[in-house]
Figure (cartoon, rainbow, N blue to C red):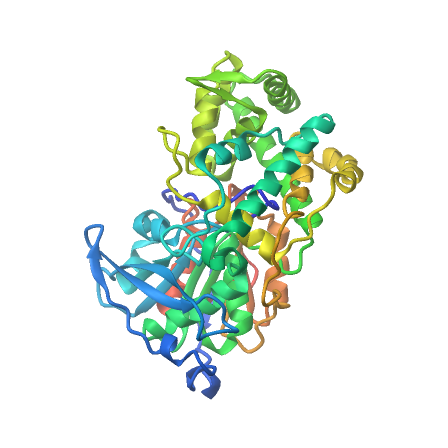
Length: 503
């Protein structure tokens, strides 16, 4: 999920271990699609809904196809764009198609599917065709393309916590440059990458897959995409799992403040683990360790560290620090990077930052995650703050999250330069009448705080909450057998977990 607007959060997959599953409710009969779900689509959309996907072999055993959708659903006879789709056929007898999205916004569903053996249990992969897609504006679909590689380097490296007017101007200027670059792109894709439009594409994909109802797994921002789909098409919801939930109706201030707190908790959990293991390189107590990380960031802000033939700036260091806090099993990478940085070598933190942003060793970008993240976030909600307004918020952010608060507060300026308005606003979410929608929350999730999962499950008419007690972003396939077994049983057998299941 999204601190507004710089951080694009893509799920990182890890391998599982066991823990015993909780009890479930009896198998639930699906709500059948109503006549409105199977009737002829809206005037002008028939050709999109009737298209057949031309699957071709790709990436070994995978199959790839292209879905055609309207650029603007209010003008279906106008320009069209492409949505790239990939399928990993079921290992055994197919029970249906499972559409998946890893988050972001800006994360690639194509890449998510390519590594689905790490992201989904064997029972799910045996039963489903795993179908990944790059949402409009992302990756291999018709993409947004707003900045040159050098400009992207500057966008990521800029000081995220300005200390004076010149630094404020530089920081705000990166958002203006992004907005201008997106607005200048040919074909107008940046004006049509809203979550609502992407959800409408998902329904065209459902029809092209030959499914009356859509089965879906969305992580992080993918929960927002999924809940939006459920609101638009409640009777076309099949088995939905939303993991690492985004609460509906969040303001940009509330969203960023909650995430600042979340990353602060994650950092303290990381340092606590280091201290508990003994001889922690950061200090003898959690407070000492956190203060040493804060001092390192301040030192890098004052004087960037050498990182090979580049310089690790405060901006790069922030991304390098945040990246391994997403998944507990990535903490050793953070240890290596911080130990090196404390010795004057910023190359490992830079590598983590590059991994986050999709930058390759030659200086190019292997995806458009950062640009798509900005374009989608800001089209969904362009309520960016002025520097003066941010300064009023700083005390609350800094008190709540001494390490990350200032940077997350300044990110509130990110969308102020947005040039477009979404053709459809994001709807209020309840998805009345849908099949059960399972929402997973992790108690110490840094990116999507646990309370957001509670809020989303409560907002949904048929929400079912499953809780994982632990660290890291998202709950499924994160080493908790209780969660994994419950989700596998739901997706494969339709066995709805007990609402409030705690794992």
